[in-house]
Image 1: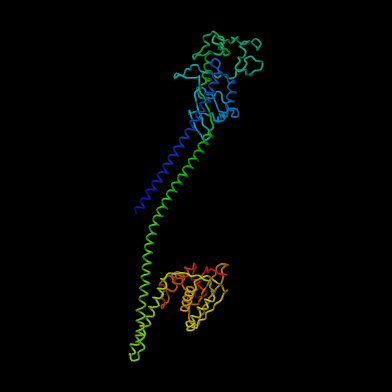
Image 2 (image 1 turned 30 degrees about the vertical axis):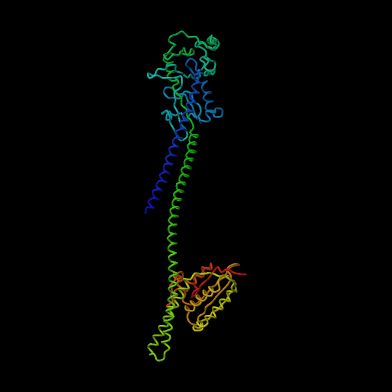
Length: 523
């Protein structure tokens, strides 16, 4: 009981260690997943920094021209030429106004929906959407902008001969109002760049229109090509086109691949940890069973030694008992032969002789069964030995008029002659006692293969029931009232000592077959 409790305690500890490994691997997988998300967020910030630098470079007096931004954004989502975007999996990019509507976008613009832009970070099965502020365009709590950036759409020529034609010269202003065509239009006189005392190249700002109404709150001037717009229209344009945020839609394929690879790795670690725990448990169980078996073997060895001593003592007792029995038998015979003795005394003396013979026969069989078997193997002609044993039993055969037929292929085997005769004698005597008068007993010999032979003794008696065919070889088990129950036990003992096998089979339609197999053939 104590051993069982100790085993259960150790099994519980192994299970606890395995569960700790499982918890550790789950925690590590969560850490790797968060690290992959952090890398994806880092990539989004790197793209945002890059785009912020581009917008600052392209900004002119607080304005960005859409025709200049669109090629930049298209190039940004081009995975063939942009290694950063190829690694991060950028799907779509867009610049947002204060209302959250895209001003300029590139890539899969269908993903730039209001639902995806409702949160600063929105994850889906295939993509993640980041809504980030744009560097250089800050918004104060009152809503007024400071150094804000306005995205200007392509501006049409106002008095062009082709109505609706747009100026795509990266924000170059069209003709001023009042002209019928572009002949009287002249671009403003921009000052030329110069080099200051520090050696830096300075680009002077364009000339101020001098109208205080052209300057808005926010720190930038109204572009001179929009001077004909009213203040209300220009303020509405600024509110609608002011650059307020950046949206990036990035693919999560790489993120899922990292998580899946790490998950498989964790599964493998957990699997092998479980195999190790199970192996340790099985090893512990085997060690425990081995220790138990060793204890049982020691006890069995002690018991076997005790049984051997008891066997020797019983054999000695049986041997010493035969001498008094022989004296009793002799005295009983003398009484039975005295003529002057009364008939009743002579009859009782003969009964004493008969009972003494029975006890002596049992003692002889017991001594024969308990005697150690020493096999002296020689080459024997099996059919010749069978014939000699049959001649020795002629008196018993003639008394019941039983016919013994020896048939089969003559074979030579390796066996102890005296023990083989005893086996044949016991089997034939058992068959003679089992069959009725005028019956037939067959002795069949033959070859099973090139190295093994067999011997069968068949009778047409009552046979042996299937449930008793194994028990008849046990000591003192017999179905014959006059039997001692040791004859077949001695036969099995001798057969096993030779390395053979014996079995009791059914002999159809009636009777029994005792088959001895694995007889070693000699050339």
